[in-house]
Length: 295
Length: 216
Image 1 (cartoon, rainbow over the protein chains, first blue to last red):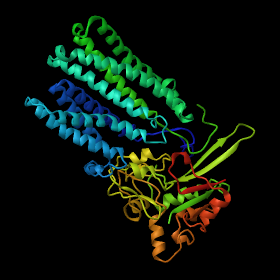
Image 2 (image 1 turned 90 degrees about the vertical axis):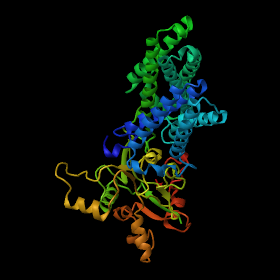
Image 3 (image 1 turned 60 degrees about the vertical axis):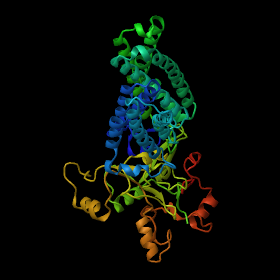
Image 4 (image 1 turned 90 degrees about the horizontal axis):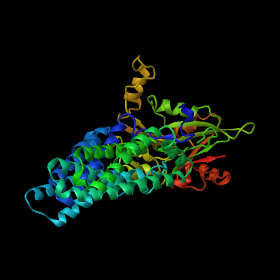
């Protein structure tokens, strides 16, 4: 792009996906996935899933997020503007979630339970799942992000991913016979919700403005169509749908663990790919009109 | 007081003097621009119009960058200037993403050379280490030459009127396309221009209330 051509047509954001920006993509994914795993695990009292969710969220996601910063050792300053900044709020949510999550796990491991604590942790886990979506939602220069559907999409994908991984953990720890059926119900409903949301999301952004149209076209039929149709649709949706359909016939308890693990992996690949596309194809509306810009 | 700028697009000839003077006076490294001149074409042959749009930070009244900054590094001063306290900036780049005008830059490397492979020249070194040091791994942007304005005010000069109390890009423009002054003063040069020539700002639908206005 020539210097004087910058922002004369829809211009992609780069700081949150290129170079070190890749770390932020991974950070949002792992933070939301980890919180989703913990969130689902609290409903079934699965301590292993809680622990793994906590580690994925706090250690992997949080660690990668801090690594992304230009000055990582100043990260503690990021809690200073919760009144207006979603990143500030997010750090508070994540921090409180991790602290209370640790207490929750200690209580559960000791054989105890506290409804108040569980509710509080679940609220914080949910807020941790959605804060990234809201942080992107308030960027009004990028039509692909500036939609109320984005936080909802991230909430559903976070919980769906959490439920899938929790199922995988249950399979690995021998708890599948007790909670596998319930988890599969969650996964089916969330899968349907996710598909519906993706469709509505793209349709709604497509009609926002010209930049929104270009963004959606870029993902669906433009430069990024292979990632969309192979990564998100084929791997991330078709394969999990096929496994769900099979499980409806045979029952989850009769399904091969290998098939279920493949479905879980495919779901995660689809989820992370979708997040990559949303970040990569986040286009700013141009500052100056240009006839050279043609969708 | 609300400092602002008016840019007359009818006068602007796209000479880049504003961009170059800003670069020079702030010793900006490669790929860091606080002033830009955008050029495009609209229409189809034979009725094609060349569009030239100089852009800088709009120092918005309802700045998105101020709202999203998690550390409070980006602040709006009483005189309307939106500035960045580099010592508080963590480099999360949320402000950069949130700015709908994309007028912020992440300053990643203080050692980047204008002549690759030759090391920093004496001028580059002086500029970045002494004259106008920028903290690496923070976000930087136009600050309406606030140090210059403050110095001018201390010396009893009038902002936007006396050259030593006016941003360098305003002074550098050979066709006097830029005017700088107090938008809250209805009798200021900028306010009169906006009123008489129907000045407008970029993307008003974002609700940012920019302090930079344009005249056609």
